[in-house]
Length: 308
Image 1: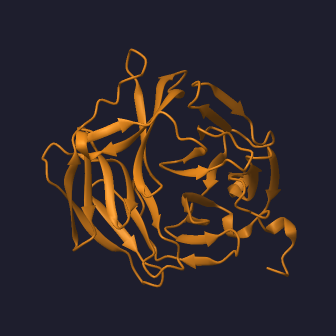
Image 2: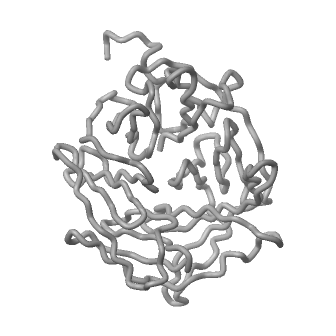
């Protein structure tokens, strides 16, 4: 790294702020890093990120997919260490999860499809396939999923039941944890849509619902967020009205809770992206702020990912 020019390396990604990475330009050869706490951006050309899609981000690592092949890799944006994974066909995959950092011997990458999971440990020569077994016939597929303390948690379609499973043999059997909740409380009349995110926070799993309507050529118009935690005594999810000094960062199908009290970011809020815009939803008064992180980015050929 000492011999590399500054323009080919990310800016110092210190933990006191949260960074939004925008991939853009021909073959996504440019990366613009937006400091959400200072509203300042840095544009770089990083060879390791050229022609790559970010599938997941955790522990300062990115899970990357080459757009022209079946090649995946892990990249640490601080050390610039890159770990190559075996080839994998990701057609119709739904979720990607990096469970634990590569420095942990239990680290695994999970690619989750409709009815099976592909897992890989750094150093292994191939992915391992594990079939799903859903205990209720009407369960069709997983709507949202996360891994917490070695347990897979998921919301299933079309019932919206919450299920869980332990990692055991080649078959992963899901069991019902809690019954369906009525997530329509507090939404507008009509036909609301939901994007659901299962996110870890302070040792437990929380559910974040992004509520939107569709208009203007199937564009999402987000107008509310609802947050829930599991209450086992009520066999269901109960609403969380305030997340205090934390903020939620949503990216693709994953997200993260972070303490932002000393960062200059807005507390008790949800940061999310759509198109090339950054939105901040206040849980205090349900207001939404809109920012354009980088005006030079083409809205038709850019992807935004939080570095979590």
